[in-house]
Length: 271
Image (cartoon, rainbow, N blue to C red; front, side, top):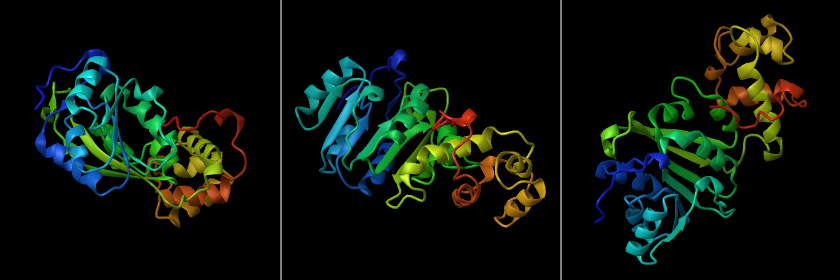
């Protein structure tokens, strides 16, 4: 069994060392199928039990020292690639992504994953607040709303900082992302939908009724409030309160025209 080292600050390394959390991750991966792409295997705490599932494992490790060490220890049982996941070519065939993400690079890695084709499921350890926001607990983030027609985000619990070595300054969160087999909005409309959601999240107004009146074809605050009530929402609610079905209904009713020029380039920018 490997001895865990202190992670390198420049790589944001906090190794997962808690056996219970490792089992939770593996149990979630066991419910999926296909080859596994692991982000940042480190000392191999997840890599070894992932191999026990009897599926091909390809791990991408940014720390050359750890990549070489793990490759030597596994002796060909898994493919270990030294490199930055953000620059790694993600395969376009069905596979599962697994990773204990460096907390300071979580948003960039999530954006990279969401834009990538092929993968069917992702099981990820991220910062607790990021996991909550992505799963829509307490309100969805703009990124989650933008991607919800194509992906389902699920929170699977809080992971205490003591589950990592060295311990980070905040707790982690275990989340899963599943690609919808039947997208709720055509993929060809993704940029338009992203820009539409961005316009609502960043548009002027003190509540959804005002925001929708000023930024969609609903026209007036009264008609916007009526539309919101029909979907169980109040005029004073904020965009984070919108459900996936409400976003899609609103997009189909008012957002299928090309986005305004000021929203171009807004795809996938939500935090």
